Length: 119
Picture (cartoon, rainbow, N blue to C red):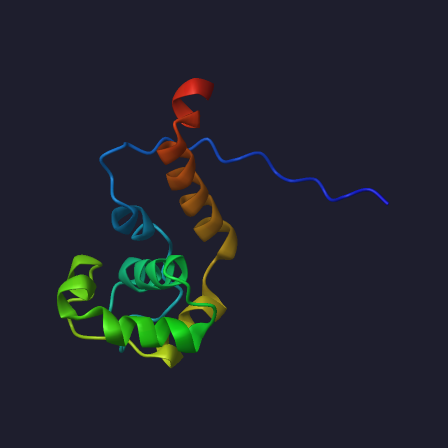
């Protein structure tokens, strides 16, 4: 049985000084404008940090955000307080996963130095 093809990484140039939080702000926000409390990039950044720290689900991501403290959340772009699990769950159910994958992949590629060698 043949394995599925893995697509080549997206060749999006990412300046080395650009923070992951800034890149995540480029992911289209699927939410309507009404009732939006936090920027989409900030919410994704919280989730990424929580997963890197070991969170393995929305409940754990919400707990990480609660425990992170206001200074850490502000640095990630959450200026209006914490975020709960249900907000993250609803957001990720509607996000463009391909676009998020492309942004995270481009950021990771830029950090490995492969983008300089390939370009």
